[in-house]
Length: 184
Image 1 (spheres, rainbow, N blue to C red):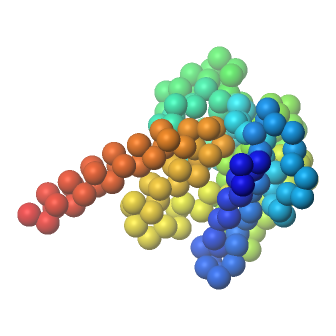
Image 2 (image 1 turned 135 degrees about the horizontal axis):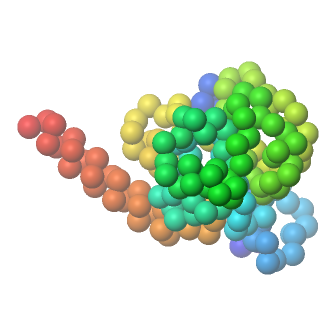
């Protein structure tokens, strides 16, 4: 509806089930009555914690890299803006993705946390913080374009849907060109 956006992520391990439902509601609008079941996220998001380098890159591509306030395992993130943020204190090191520093997460107060879900595993104490966990199962996609299309999900949290659509179309065209070249 116009009052909210419902996003359902299919469970990659059992495609007949839903991994997660998100209910996105504009921050500037009142919370609608009778929202469907799901994790509420007020949008657009301005502060995000990120568990993986891939998702840092996606946010950079969307033009919202300055909204990353914390990362897990920064030693595996080879992005200048993350290194610079860690050095100047605008980005916090949250420790290992498998057991992040919950106190640090609470201190930096992200509005969402981008995670990569694993089958039959939870998020420990982080689940008790009340901060919405956005489960990005993009790594489970079987095709490069399937994986690239996840940029559209990320865009929903920042009000960047049209921009993400244009980025995805660029990726599709580049992929098809490379595929054609490789076929020759």
